[in-house]
Length: 219
Image (cartoon, rainbow, N blue to C red; front, top):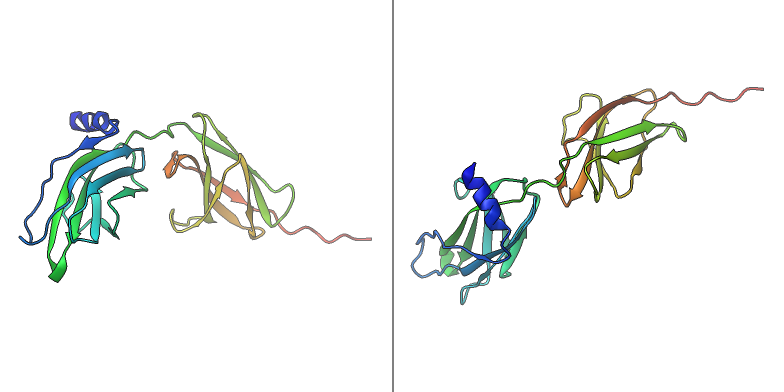
């Protein structure tokens, strides 16, 4: 825990230089140098580096600190820097920057124990659901008691669906509409506040049964 808080403190410095922990996969392939982490947030890490002469492509690989190289999440780049997004707040990460040289030669530079900042979404979200205007829509009104937010995320599906497999909607105001729902059907609806990029509050679950179709008028 002490290591985590120390890393969080270091991550607030706008320009930080890290020593490499590099391999020597191929003697003829150089590794990047002067690697600087210049920005962190609860869900992002941004960094840049000095490129290698004659190298036009790099692989960025990252994962929770201590992960085995080759098992993380990776993407290619031809730029001299990158921003990694959708990270978990208050978490230590390792990042590998691998030079791709001719004839399959590689060499990498490792950035160790970079901490994302604490979540800004520590408040609680709540929602009110109704069908005042249509049997085909559900109106949602949001509230959040933890300060300002960028918007709200809603994930819904039939009762019992697995979180992550439902339909997601994003709203940038304090109200929204789920459209095209079925009548006389029970849904699970998860609501989260979005404070910064993918930094979200803990989701609140609502189970809602829609009303039946309107009766036809008579006389």
